[in-house]
Length: 64
Image (cartoon, rainbow, N blue to C red; front, side, top):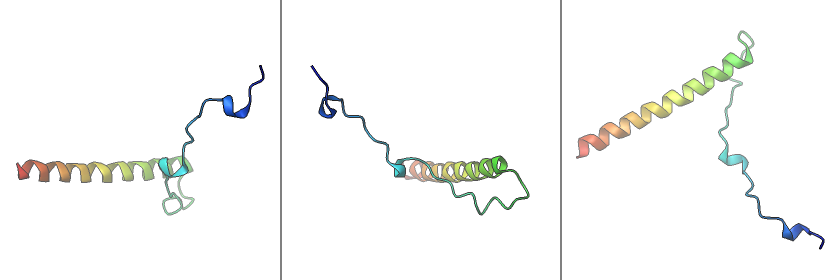
């Protein structure tokens, strides 16, 4: 029996919006390596998310 396109199991497609995106052009000015620029951008984003999580946690704690 010959398999057709419809016989294949559905594979979920990852949408581009689901992946984290980094804009590095502002951080990369040529004086540092692209790797260092990416590390700086990722660290900055992670620190920002952590700080907002801490603020939310503190406000939730104070609400109790």
